[in-house]
Length: 63
Image (tube, rainbow, N blue to C red; front, side):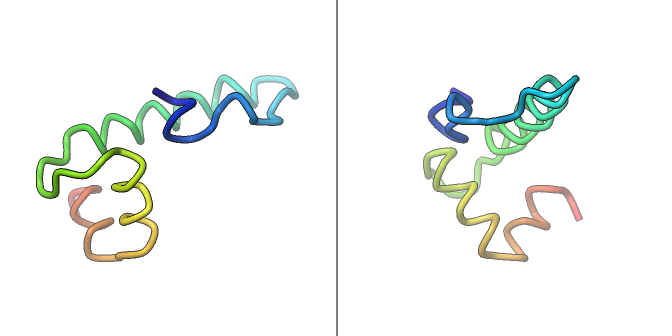
């Protein structure tokens, strides 16, 4: 799922704990997107919507 949504296989993070730390952030993001029940879009589409729409992003984060 991480590869489909975030294209993780193409990631160049290899130094120290970079890849592991970033992986935890991505998994948290996936969980936020999965818990969102408002629009019935794919996770990739929800991610784009959150990047473009401040109101939607605040709703995801619980502000």
